[in-house]
Image 1 (tube, rainbow, N blue to C red):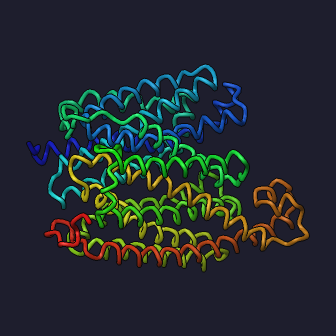
Image 2 (tube, one colour):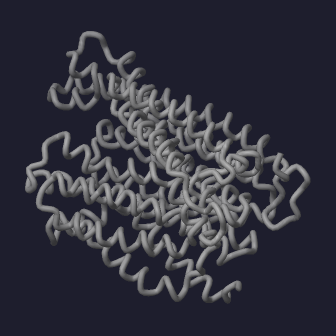
Image 3 (cartoon, rainbow, N blue to C red):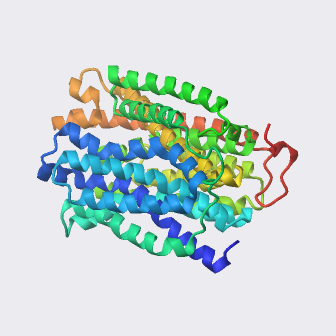
Amino acid sequence: MTPSPARARLALAVLTLPALLVALDLSVLLVALPQLSEQLGADAAQQLWITDVYGFLVAGFLVTMGTLGDRVGRRRLLLVGAAAFGAASLAAAFAPTPELLIAARAALGIAGATLMPSALALVTELFPDPRAQGSAVAVVFSAIMAGGALGPAVGGLLLAHFWWGSVFLPGVAVMVLLLAVGPRLLPAGRGRAHTQGARLDPLSVGLSLLALLPLVYGVKELARGIVDVPTVAALVVGVVAGVAFVVRQRRLPRPLLDLALFTRPALRGALLTMLLGGVVMGGVFLVVTQYLQLVADLSPLAAGLATVPGTVAMLLGVLAGPKLATRVRPAAVMAGGLALAAVGLGAVALAAGHGTVWLVVAFTVALAGMGLPGGLGVGLVIGSAPPEQAGSASALSETGQELGMAAGLAGIGSLAVAVYRLLVPADVPAQARDSLAGAHALGDETVLAAAREAFTGALGVVAAVCAALLVGVAVLAAVSLRHVPAVGAEPERELAPV
């Protein structure tokens, strides 16, 4: 039974809570890390695991948890995940040792993976009308983005008044609220717990984890500039396990991930567009924020504030994309947004070295353009899947974005480093040739000026290359989604699975 509009809107507000919090927990710890490391005595390796294990396990368990929600009921899994997330947040807040904090963060990651696919899938039941559904998905997606942006600010505010563990307490409060109102407001979800064969295939679960966890780890290590035996081995293991996972899914009557989803043009086109767009913007965001702090010489707070206009513009684009797609074809909206982002990045390339204000304005234009395909793409992925597989589809969307951002940090970040080393004068000390941060550490103004000029050139090259890449992605979106009608219109023949 479809809930009343007022009840559906209230339920949507409830579903934004886990979306906001899962993203918040990815970034809120960054400002608390120095304080907790000092008080807990965490060494460098432990600090790395404290920050990274959460994201690794969220990404690794998304596919499994998305399918599990489809089979046992999304509300049930959401509430179980909320209880686990709240308990793990409490354990993290009062962890007495680095090892226990790492364990608590790992539990948070697994619990977090249950929340997002279930929340997005429940939106499809609350808003069965495609037009309203697209806008509702965009609201949840914008909450994810807002959570990531607000994390450092929320963490800083809490640390100004409380101990480091306080950054985890919002998770307890939000999950208690979700557990209190969720059972009354949220639909049960289309579970398949009572159908034959609904049990998850343990080997498929194991292969999915063996594919995703090493891949995410390897890509993130590449993003740090680490190319060693463990990194390469992780990537190889991930690829081999991924191939084995695909082979097994093709043989199972009820697979963990139905590969037939990829035969749907809207899902396939939107997923690929978001993946490639994430690669570009993930890397560019890293280089621009480094420029603001290391070249423009802004404080971390000022650099964060400089990205606020872009974040707001992106959020507005996320919300506007599904509404525009009710009037024109999604291909036009997504391609147009990517083209606007390409124009913005082209302007970043021209503005680099000619004033921070112009750079921020250009980057804001780029982020506004990226917002248009963001929420719309997620809605297309989820909306094009059968209702009983909405959780699996949302998990695919989130996994693709996670891998895209990680690959962007590695690939585009490596390009920036290579161009910087090419442009920096050969007669500067090796530490300055290695990185701009190394030039800062030397304290020599002449060397620093040369290094800043080289990094500015690197930013220009990276922005220009990424602008060209986005033009290609825009063409891909226009071609791959050309047969998808405006949201709410009658589907065309070409939309049928092939």
